[in-house]
Image (cartoon, rainbow, N blue to C red):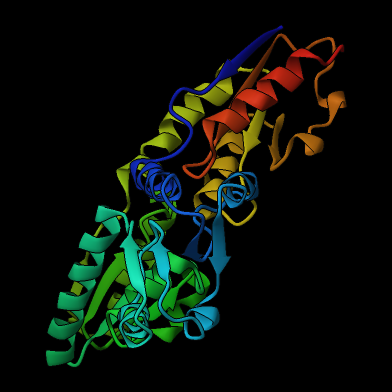
Length: 291
């Protein structure tokens, strides 16, 4: 039986940078606070906690003083920076540069739309760390759209500027754009509709690669944390191409019955928040299975 680890899977640049920043800091210090999970993968979070990384919530941020706090790749709203200044907190900012550029675009777009009495719409998961940071650039006035079912939140007779959470899928974004265009046409108004494709290539480019990878293997083991948005999306990409695709977060979730005597190849892949060491551990475990 052949075991293949997808070379394109694993941490994206933003996550690598955040984790390396935390590791480098902890080489010289005993502890470091992190605002939210540094990455949406419990196994990696547990590994870093053993080095001294302590995850805190936004509520806890308001209660600590004279400390050092890491901002993860997802980015933060302006309120987090204000709270840090108020409480004399030193920030180690590991926000992904792609997300920071998007925040700046949303801020400028919000001011433009305000002048036109228009609306900023963000296609993303409500409550997601990145989306909270983006909405913060609009004084939380942005309309958050998780799917086409949420489009009734929009006034299609007023100007609309659309952005996307960087880790959403191309297919979902295209559907949102198409549906908004149809709803504008149905309204009978010549509404100004500005489309900003702000999807991150590190995620969107993985979908076509995973489609090919899934077809080449008899069984797919998709390794990801349950909190990962792009993990859920990329897993559905695998499942659509190969029905023998299974989502696992830990080694304990690997069911030996998935690897029967007819399986000639097992493909192991993951999200942008999945550490390579975990996929390698999964590969070792699969080698020990006797169909």
